[in-house]
Length: 430
Ligand code: HEM
Image (cartoon, rainbow, N blue to C red; front, side):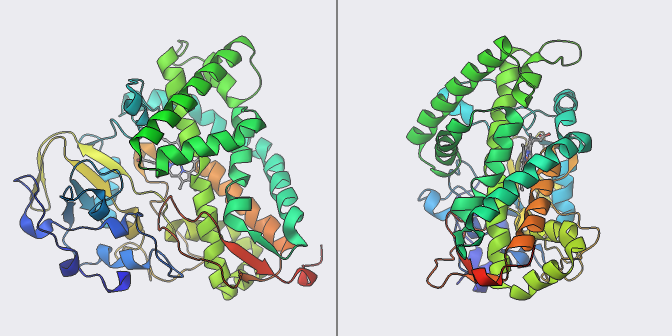
């Protein structure tokens, strides 16, 4: 049982590099988002990993029998960082930890351009970050706000009288992607194809599918970039290809690196967060009542949903040899931060296991921290806040539809289908 895991029950004797102490070797794939569970709080089993009695650095060796015992796609052993302060160090100590190679699925098809800005280390990183940041600024988001609200309201209205919806498939999967495609200027008819490619790349764990989808999306994005070079419009891809980075036009590799990574980062992160948010509320009607009765809590409630459901755990690579918490880290070692435990570290968060929609100073790691803190976070927050606002205006108390499979991955895979239901005649007066 996931809830019964202890450090001792997670220990393994799989081969690891010589510098890894035996007592740090564990298998924690269940805490890394790769094993589904059916708990109302699917991240609950990970929380003890941030406890004071857990050694500061653990190590997941490469499983001898393949990924079934490790993490999907795992190709090497990795250090696991589970406490808040240590995770903060990994995200902020750019001298010790590098992002090189992060999310570079293009390597599967022999491409060498870089995922920008995610895979770029400081100081080079800042020029790209500064280049892209104005497109996610508060004033830019203010301009998008009415459009986002209209999409949310129209989509909710389309099913409000039916008394039920598959909130993951028919809403969560679509709402953020419509907003993202508008922002970038992508044509609406690419919607299904984008989601298919993206699913294969991030979630299939099948090299052939990843390669085929990478070829498909990169050919499409390059064609789209060419089209915007010739016929600019007011959307983000045009701005990227026609702007100047430190006075120079971006190279072909820089253009595809930025457009590709935005495409990857913007598609299903918000969708996964929406799935978790509604599943949690459907299990906890009193939480719905609190937010409905106190709409001023929506911003802090969104932050608490994000803290309590960290859909991404981030990796880095050690840049040089150093000692940390009594163990030797070697240059090139992989380091995986478990935001899924750091967000519940009792040394950082008061009463971390309680979902507190009014929690203050909620500095969680769901968008990581440091220079790579999610560029799309202000947009994601705005989408989630507007969604709750429009939702509670239109939908009465809801619950999981009887017979629904509520199994969920505590990670980006999240949940593909989640049927929720309500009494349509009880719709709030508008
Ligand atoms: C709830 C939704 C989202 C979550 C949980 C999320 C999560 C993350 C995380 C964890 C990182 C850092 C990865 C690392 O450093 O290893 C990141 C970076 C990034 N995200 Fe998001 N993201 C979300 C939404 C978005 C959206 C909507 C966009 C774009 C439209 C976006 C674009 C980016 C970009 C460009 C970066 C790279 C930033 C940099 O390296 O400077 N994200 N995101």
